[in-house]
Length: 50
Image (cartoon, rainbow, N blue to C red):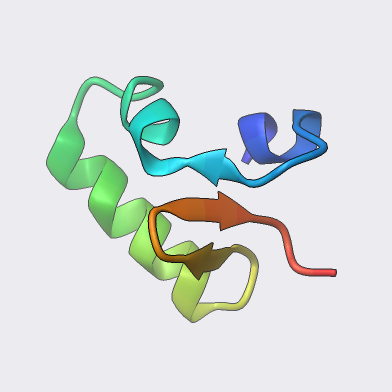
């Protein structure tokens, strides 16, 4: 979330993966954020909703 808040542009999935060492935990977290509407996913990028 901090990276998305700092960025003025969508954040690529590869950048998000590099921020967390446990890939499985990261995928669950991101999936939950997307499901809850707190993060939007568009292909291989993430961004905060408008």
